[in-house]
Image 1 (cartoon, each protein chain N blue to C red):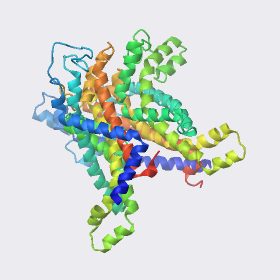
Image 2: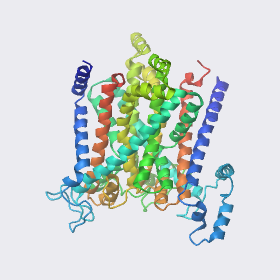
Image 3: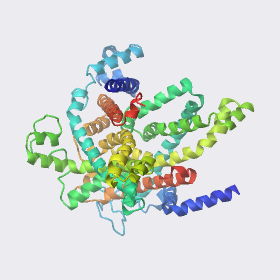
Image 4: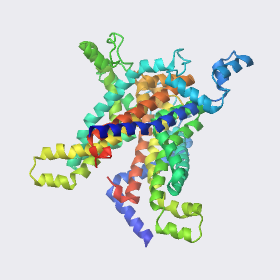
Length: 342
Length: 282
């Protein structure tokens, strides 16, 4: 059993390789199809014909494309993702510095939305056409129709301007506080580790609105899928048998039905992540959140290509690894997905 | 007889789900505004005036922005551009996605493997992020926003087309058409493709709202549409800095217009699906 699971994991990792190759190929094509001649661009505005030729040779642009691609992959593997023209620092360093901010926001948003959407979906499925069911439908419809930046700005207006509950939507921590000593880079975790509850509360205040914005956005697909999956499971034979055997209603509902219904929900999480990582960029702009999304927006506006490429690549790698984790979780939860077990 | 039955079915489905009726009327309204927008708008959408940041009033229904422009006129005029971007992007991905999906589903083998691999590679990116990258490379223009949105929507059409064609590929009517002397391409385009059109249309209207959201998101972060051109995403972006000082109307009305348009297309998509494919109702 244990070894067969290892084999499954190995197989799944191997299957991710072509995807990885595809992603790197696409970003390579994106770098090479920059408007104009990249050598002219990177040599700078004061370059003459000779220095352009030198830049071309030093960047390997005079080599055949497969050689260039090999070199590109090699550079990426060695952590050389180019230098950001905007900040003058290596792209990978910039991304690494800003990644925790984005991760903290995305993960908190996802946790919040799951905490709200799964119970909502279960309630809606157990009471079709009730008030909860209609509420679920409203959430699902509104969630897919609301532009995420619009939701964020509405929340800012209501909770910052009107009610004054939230701090001003500028970054992760008000300048009055000192950021907690870096362990994980997630302010909420770090401040707790340092035992500094005041900073924790301040960081929580800052992250609340952007995280709720993301959560509202991600709730729709999760609630919809939970409801549909629960409806399917509740109508199945083994639930009828379990009920007929006289099991307590909550045992039937949670142990028998919910566990099985969560499998398709887990599968949709992959798609949810795709949307979340995109929405994250917009939310970061609304709340001036210093994550990789706002870094990418600045880079886009300034035509800082190396930075944009690094951003696209890192997001894709993040997405692929998240999908991988979901798949592996799936094989853990559902032995049938392991292949040999059936 | 058939037409009567369809009509009865349509009326039945619409009666079951009054929201669909609302969605179709909203759609008619949006299209009307898109066509006649410049004539409906009471003010010039790009003419600034001295009355800046005025709250909604009888003269300016949606208030005025930081340059004294009438928000109502701008929201109205923007409809055409937003709709144009979304419709052209979706049309492009519909056509290209159909062709790729049909080829993959019909021929199978290596054709299928290569096309599916390319589609999977697109899907391996967070889609909005990929769109940002594409616009960065192609250059910052409305045209490129359309291409980027089309590329990230393409997989949805290609997958539906591939799945539906590969199910029908071996069907009796396809074999009969082949035996009657039609070429492969003719069987595919004249006999198989019309059969999957309903499913593709459902996908189209479900996808439309998402395309509008993506295009608006791109212009919200400053790509594509250049000020002072009125467009919903960029209007929200311009109004964003005034929300902390309480001038909500700059953001609210273009945002609400965007939301209404997306809501309308989603509802229409659900309605169309109920009409065409009742088994998939949820």
